[in-house]
Image: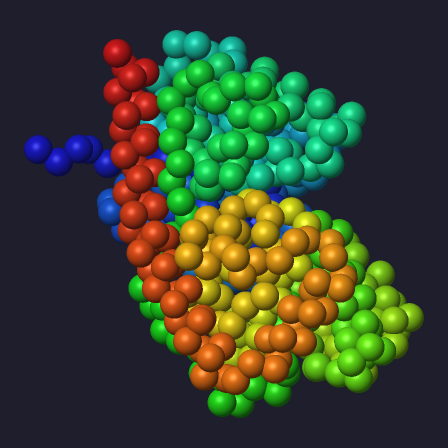
Length: 383
């Protein structure tokens, strides 16, 4: 007999980046499988792109999309947002409250602390979040204290990478004492279509947020080193937005490479990939980044740092290609070497990595794994 459909509410803060992509993929997949799905998130971030996505998605999610103002850091705004979250949960009576990211984890799990006999289950996917935030700092210790406090209110931990599962154990001191499992991020079959670079006008591409953790400053310094040391001036398209955009634009001027750099706001990834022959991701910290998954699946030649779960995407056969983070000289050498390689050789290497991603990071596997975890958690709670 088929299991009855579930009522699922996804709770997170910002409709941005890989976390947002993950929620959209999971929510769409669950709705396609006949479940009633809703979203609760911030109303002040995401811009026009998030608005367009939500407008399209509103026809699919039967529990609706609720957006209220939320702050990134603790503030009085949290009280109103928490009240709205509690009111929504009472009205919808979901079977599952799936929390994503640190702030979503607070909104979704604090009420569960005071409802030990609740009928719904709480699932939590950290997505890096506070586990990657300034390790060793006072703020990090506070955030880990909150994570320890909320652990008993969590019926199911769903780690999207083995790396984040390991970060939990290292930061909290043990693996979760409630049910937990790794369900890897996955991408759709359509994303394995190789990108056509016939009209590419850039040598390099950076795609992602413009903030310190992404290491874009290291990339700009590497471009300056290549120009001074090797008389190389590859053109680069920098696609993204974030708090450091003005700083990074100014840095291209001070480093003497502004004429090589073109900045564009976020847009469809495949359109960006088609404009450049090589993508460079110089991150200092990551979880399991979708931008690497999508680029690797599309057979885009890549230069990336060995941080977070990127090594899981590359796998044991390809991990040696990753470079250390925060090393301008190594990054410059990697760019020079990649530019010098024949196009056919770069494409063969990219195709091999795409095959590895196809084997281990499938969208259907991710959606089915999440739903299976919900069912197990519900069964345990009802017992």
